[in-house]
Image 1 (cartoon, one colour):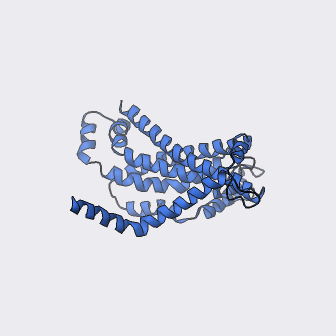
Image 2 (tube, one colour; image 1 turned 180 degrees about the vertical axis):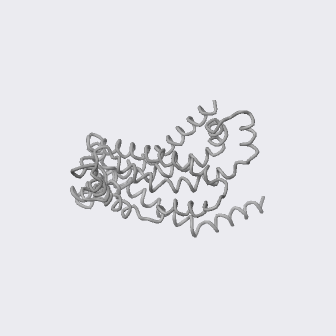
Image 3 (cartoon, rainbow, N blue to C red; image 1 turned 120 degrees about the vertical axis):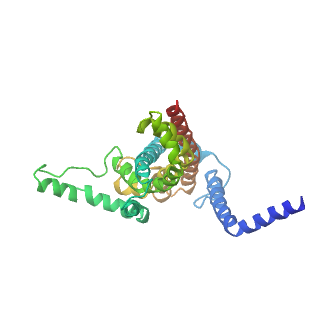
Length: 287
């Protein structure tokens, strides 16, 4: 009994220098945001408990437009990233000449900051970008096409998928490689085609990695700011962009805190829901 207690104390003591600082700083930020959303720490007026800021935001249609827009972008971006990463992970499952080089090239987006990626994308699709110049040079179009800041957020989805797909590939590749060859061979001997083997063997055995990839990508995409500002719709704000407007344009730290807390709730609940949906899809595929 004493040895187990000493062992537990030793483990906690070893984790405290790293994990303790991370949990402490994150906890301070979360607590400050919650407290500020309830009317405290008001830098421009009197501080005190109040639900006025929550009532004002929850009754604001712009807040809900930003909320549902960020949710939609995060869900689509997460599932698109995983959908593209799965076949690549299966393709690279067994090494072949040049496979390591291909895998390295695919991971390049992880090294490029989001803001830089957004500017590169804009250079491609802008009024005087490479795509319009190329199409006009080939005589396909006479005037440049308007592709930047499309109202449906397609540009943001493309950027989210391009940026997050390599991360999903990192999580899925290890799980796919862990599947034994004899399991896949047995399924093939029983008459299962590629799609059936994926639904009934690969997807169930890699479900944990799939859920982790979807949850992490969803959290990052829901809080996106740079992609939305550079390439997103002009008349729609993401939650991060809307939060920045509350603080900079309106000077309301408390309203910004309400949006920030709402974004944290969206990230927490949304990632769990996305993971549950993926589990339901995989289980349905098994049947």
